Length: 368
Image (cartoon, rainbow, N blue to C red; front, side):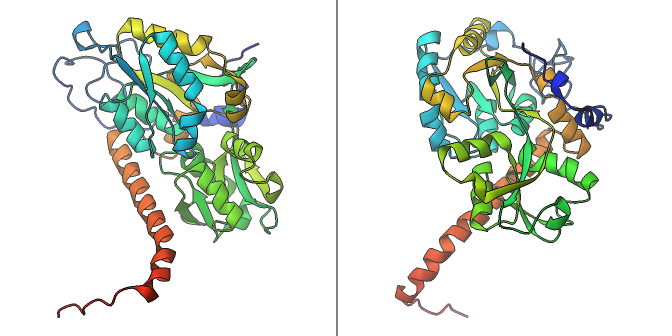
């Protein structure tokens, strides 16, 4: 029997959710045609008159009915990998909606959110944390999560270390190198920042935070010894082990969190209502083929979900670490993602530069 996500949460996380919401900055002035509408935490240009925390469908004149639907999935792992894994779903959506559906490969959470905000993306699977940015800033309307016959999937945050390391507790990581995935990630950054201080370990103060750029990169980095530890999403780690990318016996879990919802599947708020209903129907009636079940951790279907209910624990974590899902916060986190990516690219190119240096053509000395 399906249970609501909140009913499955332990008392610790429910207590966190009971924390008072942080004060929000005054909402920006509404855009033309939106004067006086209730917005809540949504960005300007969106209304939430029914108070369900997501953008309302606009008036008929502003609704869209695209001839081609564009779908993208969160880049928590190699984006090219997901393009192959979701091919059966893309083909199903084409048949079911009667509209050509294509996969759009994104390389960052920020790029995915901006693609939906700009109207270039119609349907998307957003990672847990970035879902809230997509809702508030891009008009995304979550409607489903993946799961199995008994209910939808959840994941835990795992603190991974190498099995041959001396680290047994969080306290052992003081002064070490710990990989967080990206600044906007719930499991890879925000949840650790919410939970670890109460457990005696303060990110940035007690250990050095290094942004890896993705859960798979964090896992591989710990495996290679580039990082001493990494908080990662249990579902991503499990898929990597099942695919043979890493060996489970090479790792040790020294801490795990209470459960969170996995990635949301959302659609743009301004699609024609009949198209929204059709997309929702196409997802909920779909059953994954065998290869897709294997690639997606044993999940075989989509379950209905709402942002107000299923994302309550995620919003509680953000409130606890004073990380509002606002435009200013998004711009700051996007900047951090870009800087981290630039550092990784520089690190990857450095060995090639050093190898090429002895054979390089001598350059003229710079002018004084």
